[in-house]
Length: 446
Image 1 (cartoon, rainbow, N blue to C red):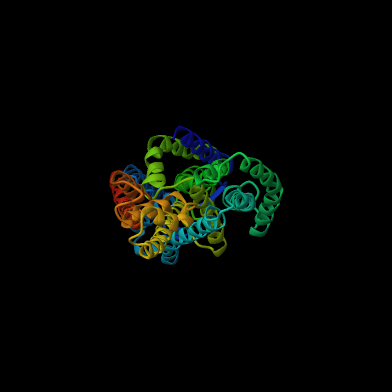
Image 2: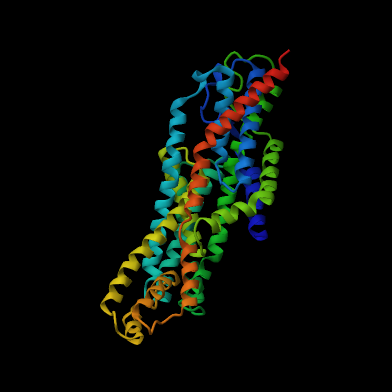
């Protein structure tokens, strides 16, 4: 856990400080019409209220273990404070409609891509008799795909402030890196495969370093993108107070402003402290409380997150990396449930065909399942009690297997908690920001 927090804090802060975006739209993606806020004082109050409302909601949700979107919280805060200042007409409802759509589309897309990647990995590697040979063919290709996805994602989302490239240029750079890495990775995997067993636990070690690399790059790009979103209102306040005193006829903070380094440093320090305080709880929520993850499944989730954000960026959809990643976790969990249920039907049919025979015959009939993954073996062994008095496993073993089986299922309570937090993020942060706006106005008006 300490290592995970250190990696995340280092790369989140580095992304914010190195590639945190030199310019941001002070009104957050056109959520409100800046021309409607026609004086500096009102604009400062709106941005202050937006920061306060979003901050309180984010810290509350995080303390409760609900991984909510920073960007959506800020959007809700700006919308609520803007409505409090100038009425409902100030909101760009088309942008809000796109954000609402992304609540559904981004987690579903992340879940489908993660499930497809895991199914591919299960079918091409873990379900085969020649697992080690399959590993030598498939794993290098998947790691090369990861290299392409993350280089492209990093250039599009994390390094756009340093050297902006169109999608074609970013994708071409990603292809170049993937090609350069493929052959060294293939040789490395081939050497490692000679020293490991074909069991899933051993094969999972091949994904250790790619997974750490993916987590680091995700953290860097997230820090570059979302920290700028979080401190955008503060940057707008700094801009209007230092360069635009008095009333701005065209709307206070209507254009794009640069983010001073000290503002980005505040965001970088804040995200590092937040990781230290709340990181372990959220890591346990995402890593353990939704579904059981191993390294290969986590690898599919990280790769799916990058691929989904790349596709969404090209379609112009305002997706949240938080929503995409959590959706990918649920996608992996529901795929495992589907595979388990499908196997259960097959095992039931096999056992029905051998009902009444001794346990040796039943065991022989199920021999072809012995190379199945551990979770599939649990279902098979659990059903062997139907073979009669000569059951292969004891009652105590069945209890342990039943407990292990429950851990792999998607926890509906976690799904309900996270979905509820996502749905209420924008309205709750908006309501809080509106209240703070009225409070600030009441205290500061003469």
